[in-house]
Amino acid sequence: MTELSAGSGPLFADPDPEAARAFFRHKSRALEDKVMPVREAVSRFVRDGDYLGSGGFGTNRIATAALHEVLRQRKRSLSFAGHTATHDFQILAAGNLKGEKLLARVDLAYVVGLEARGLSPHSRRIIEGGQLETCEWTNYALACRLHAAAMGVPYMLSRNMLGTETFTHSAARLLVCPFTGRQVVALPALYPDAALIHVHESDCYGNCRIHGVTVADLDLARASKRLIITCERLIPNEEIRRAPHATVIPSLCVDAVCEVPGGCYPGNMPGEYFSDEEHLRKWLEIEKDEADFAAFLDEYIYSTGDFAGYLEKCGGAARLAQLRDLELLRG
Image 1 (cartoon, helix red, strand yellow):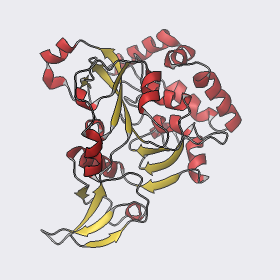
Image 2 (tube, one colour; image 1 turned 180 degrees about the vertical axis):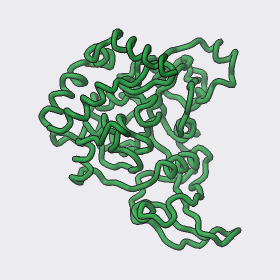
Image 3 (tube, helix red, strand yellow; image 1 turned 45 degrees about the horizontal axis):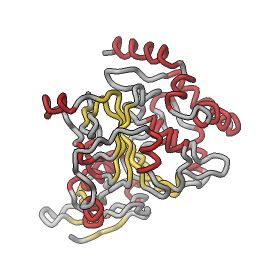
Image 4 (cartoon, helix red, strand yellow; image 1 turned 60 degrees about the horizontal axis):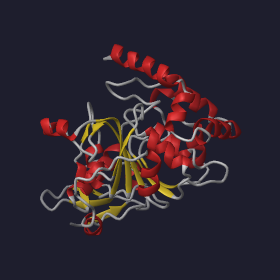
């Protein structure tokens, strides 16, 4: 196909499906017990310099417990897929404080805003201050890139971003369709090195169930070289076998399974608990001053040791019970 033009943005991940297949060829597909603590999973499967993907949508069904552990272990020089990322990006951006650099490169779609709650002051600070190398996309474009990777093809064709400045600042290509002669946008496949996805239920092997909207997570799971699953509940494999159609992420994609009840908090876990709007507002407010924000992170994340300690600091079982009641009222 004829290339008409190219976006000026950098490409942070290799779109070559053969390079990805060389990795996947050696990934175990055996039914192995993959249950482990979040600390071990992040230590083993998220490495400095990785390209990281995060599941969920906005503050909904995000893998907060795993994201906190990435921050707690002070991972370095990560690239990140900013696809529908709000509080998850906010957590990772906290690793770029006091001269530290957890994030180095970000594919930007939706990252700084927390919907109607407002914009993250710290996320704005590090982007506007030039701490991150960035490339612009739309949410749909990033979803297409993950879909291309899940299909095992080097790019996906779309009409998305045509005639926009987003295309200009992306790493996409403008091509001529060989069938119609019309202009189409080629979106390169995106194969994250590691991904974090929170689900409702999983068995010990990593066969996962999600209740409600899956967003791009099914493609993210299949595109990612290493996948950490956190779940509200572990269920027996016999239950998985009784309703195989309910499994949306198969075990062959998964490297670690971590049972973390409340693991999306302070986000919303559909059917389980509502988002803690007070705590999310507290994050946004405290970020305005870097010294206050550093003290907040020390108190709530670094000093608590694990996610259970963070939950307890935020009100523990009693607060989660309130949020469960609120979710039931909404349902």
